[in-house]
Length: 304
Image (tube, rainbow, N blue to C red):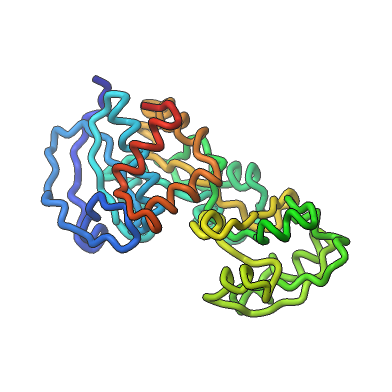
């Protein structure tokens, strides 16, 4: 059996961790007490953490099951909270591995960064991380701002990229939260980067509904939103880096990075944008458990 380095584990404080989620995987799952407050000082397990967010927990469970299949002992510390809680735990070795997002994590460490394209963001993140933390291979999957159209609109106008919007000959109306109008990736960004002129309509919480109804014909939707699948939306590629890329990336304590890299990098290579959306649908729509979702995905990908 493979094992991580032996190390003493500091108990995760209640303020940092809160209650661990049951392996329900559903967006409305209730947190349950983990039942342990002081891990064995001789522990040699890999501790996998997650945010209190169903999509992030699914990825964490995939990491955990992949490691277990490879012979590692794994402990789950899910629903830890936000970065101010789990980053210190990663730095001191209380947690070993965490699903993160490149763009958002880069901005946490460097709020002046001008990187937006995926590879540029990934490179800048590696430079920005503090000593003791590193990232493994980033995944093609993202959880970030994106522009979407309906499948019917994409088929009618031959759309697959933001580049394709220029000169299609119909008025374009962009829907999204009110603040999008002034964001650098809003109407001005579309004009500057792609030469695309749009009218803006604040749609807020009803953005997807307005897109489907035809009130707007382009919408700002997060790229891992399950409704991209359930409403048959098409996410337009962003080859010029209008949006800050935020790819799923394994954040790890540097002490164990080499030990788990082969297993976790194999997972990252298989996790696609469409695949992450489908995983989220299984949680929010099909109400499947996190454990079942992870196992089925790993088997489909030939990883277990």
